[in-house]
Length: 380
Image (cartoon, rainbow, N blue to C red; front, top):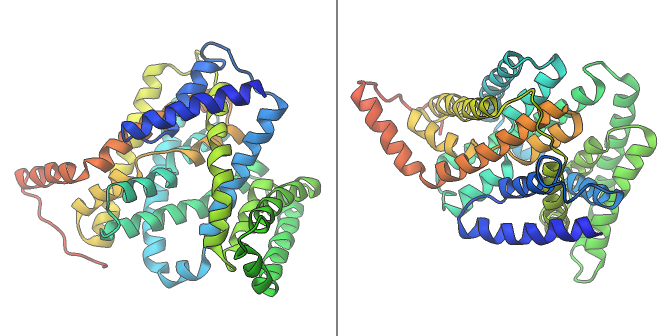
């Protein structure tokens, strides 16, 4: 338990520092892990106990993702949802893939880097919107839809990476059966589940914890990805009482996810294959790719490139999902470059989100200087 105590103690201090500086804590956790682990002082090494807690952080985060996948909301705005999501996907995944190939990564590693390159941190994006009081902005809803679309793409990326881009018919069939059972049970047992979740004793938190852990264990027992299974469980339970489930699951997610980030940093070992200059260049490219997609989305959805600057400023940061993909499927070289991207873009994104009004003013001056005309809104 020594390594857990050290990781939690340092994380608590860094969380206080990050809040004081109005910065996201994720890069601080990763940097702490880098300092403590293979790339630093080698003071902490993973153990079976730490691996267990790290796995819990992963499954509770993905369970949270499932709770956010509400089919009725998606169908209600499917046109804007698809347009926003496809622009974001095509531009960032393509740029990330080409950049990875240019650095000499093999195909599967290039997909891992491109996937991490594409998926923004929904935690940082939502926190930026709330902390900077941007909920009233129309662009904030667009950011939310982007994050939901990325969550759905994450599911398909996990399937593809887990199977090595083959078609595992048996795994897909077993997963489909399990997902169908989840949805049927939640449909038939909606009221009993709601009654338990509305109690004021220990039963709601016990039910939530048991369901998530049991789903992950069951998935491993029948040979399907536990990552996908807990997402499916969350999506099924989102039809019952999602706010109550989020309230019960959040303490587990928050604590275990901190350990996930710290021990990810501990496991990273920078090799001579990828230098710091390459990591810095790719991180800058990651910022610029979200600028391109953000401006295009702003023009297509809101009829304004300036609106795209607001969207960009809140989606620069890569974080939890990039780390998940790297930890599950990345080589040592891919993991090191993704760690650098997450740290750099998290810091850049926090400042961009905070000072987006100034950035939009500078953008408007540039447009005026070069005589560019504003476009008309296409959608509201």
